[in-house]
Amino acid sequence: MTNMYDVIIPAAGMGKRMQANKNKVLLELSGKTILEHTLQAFQDDNNCRAIHLAAQSEELEMFRTFALQYHKLDVITEGGSERQYSIYNVLKAIKPCEYVFVHDAARPFVTRETLQKLYAAVQLRKSAIAAVKVKDTIKRVHGTEVKGTLNRDELWQIQTPQAFEYHTLLAAYEKAERDQFLGTDDASLVERIEKVSIVESDYDNIKLTTPEDMYFAEAILKKRGII
Ligand SMILES: Nc1ccn([C@@H]2O[C@H](COP(=O)(O)OP(=O)(O)OP(=O)(O)O)[C@@H](O)[C@H]2O)c(=O)n1
Ligand SMILES: C[C@](O)(CO)[C@H](O)COP(=O)(O)O
Image 1: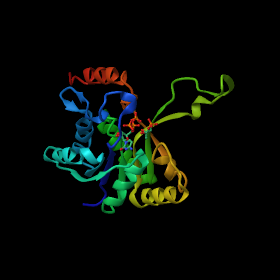
Image 2: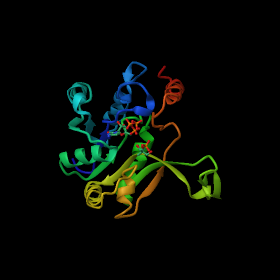
Image 3: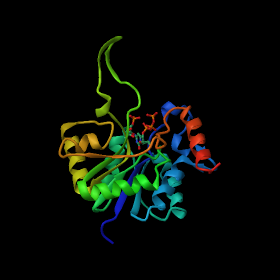
């Protein structure tokens, strides 16, 4: 079937800032790992054709066992030393397809609504990324000196999923490799070759990064009636 998307889920991080002494995506939330919550979101989305994972070498076998439960799980490839390298490894390992979403394993609360909005947007605008409006006042600071206040109307906090045409994403990653460009998200690579648009997401789509994020995660699960 055409016009569906594949998703690449980088899950090969160390979770250093979480201080859990293991890959944070294997921490449990209401009886399931964070990674499983994330896999479930894409397993449940009818527009998602296949799920591909980047894993640490020592976790490759364990991640393969998830395929028993999550049937869309397809390619599982070894990650790299940076998020960008992990995603590039997967991108090179999968078969060409029409659209690719990239989504952090560490963002387990992505909603069906955001996935649907992104899928509609990528078909129309070729590249679309999830984002929320910045709530705080943001200043530019050198050392301790305030250099200016940024116009909040122009500032968005960028999340994943990020959705692209497969060939565009591959070209952006190849160019980044040639230029030795390292970005903090996928869009920063694509922005170097074409326009990227945002889709408004929600504030629950947090990345579980530091220990206090686990409290926010519990609150979100309570709000959703899961615990
Ligand atoms: N070399 C890496 C680094 C990160 N990731 C993945 O990219 C996502 C977002 O990265 P981040 O939150 O920074 O995770 P970690 O790198 O694990 O965390 P830390 O930086 O605290 O070590 C996570 O799902 C993580 O598993 C990855 O696949 N490969
Ligand atoms: C793409 C991303 O989710 C943007 O928020 C990314 O994973 C950020 O990683 P960071 O290392 O926490 O900036």
